[in-house]
Length: 531
Ligand code: GDP
Image (tube, rainbow, N blue to C red; front, side, top):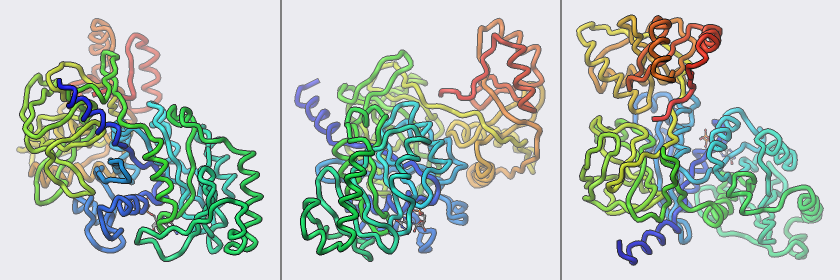
């Protein structure tokens, strides 16, 4: 490996920031995505990400059903330049039914932006998502949104984040008023006041800045609000944490920004924080416990997401690969570690603000799309020619179950094939009881059931329907081979194989599960399964 090549990779790694947005539905994730892209100057007119209100078809919409319901089912990837950096934003599905996809997407980023509705504060889904980011201590940047509306007391908002989410807050900007009286923000680190203008949501604003807190211009421009700001800032400096980069990188402290995504105000402050402080592409762990770092010059990456029919014109499935190390070059050979096969990849896709383009080269932190004809699974590792696998991409035990039945019984084989493929994508899970010919579909959210029937019809040409079934939960079971064999004999009526032939326990009630766990202490019942 030449020195020049290693240096090139290290330079490209240093430029990159890969992040996702976590928030409760309606907090403003889509709006802030639009503004972020506007700052990345990839789309001239903000407003093309989600078309549910304008009636346009959004770039990330991919299924008729999604459009009908106005829900963003997909995880798309957007790459854009900001200052001298290259930013990858991984969109996570907004609807809570698709949380499993969201969880896996969070394994592919190095930092997260948490968007909170300033009028509402910390909401449930944010709490859940923060739990997931904790698994890897992902650094979090916070944006308090909707300052153009009356929000709650900002200090109280910070307290709530600290109490409920157990992360220290370091305000970087501080708001001056809110709602009709929203005047702008004071930037604590730059010691400057940035004034807010309404009606500027669709463009990059010329910033109106007043340097220094004691500047008399502040009194001229803000009137009584100037004195109030000075008092508040004194209070805030006494009552809150200072920004500390190490604590931020450890996931223990979050820089907090205030603004309005709709008014495109404050989004640039947040982006500046992101490119200055958020980590460059980070190492990932293998199942042997070793870390593969981004400046390792041999190519490696893992699949965190598979998606079908992203674009009706390309009836294909795309596997999303996060590059961990080395460099992707068009036409290169990669090893798919699970199958041991070496494949030549000459048509990987990149995602420049939603448009699919063929990539010539890509670097750690980037996401590339591989065309998948059913051979790639979530969690697959690709390498230059090594045989390690990345760990940590979970499947979650489903919480909802239905029996699936064919309208035309002759198509059983296609049904099974479709279900197994959909479960490989992680869209849903399928269980085949050991003692019957039933097919049980398990999902984390109820909307997934509809997606499955829709896709079975359009992609596999089978008409299926659901029946209720008395299943409360499922667990993957593992243990010593002899013990598992014995368990298999004794508990056969409750056992099934999942899409990947892993043994699972299907419990009619939670009490039944507890009893089984007590009765078979040598068996491990897992709520998650790693691919
Ligand atoms: P998502 O569900 O998190 O993607 O939220 P959206 O971006 O779709 O926003 C939900 C609603 O809040 C939409 O009606 C937005 O127009 C509105 N919204 C988003 N940001 C702001 C903001 O800064 N101020 C106001 N007033 N409304 C906003």
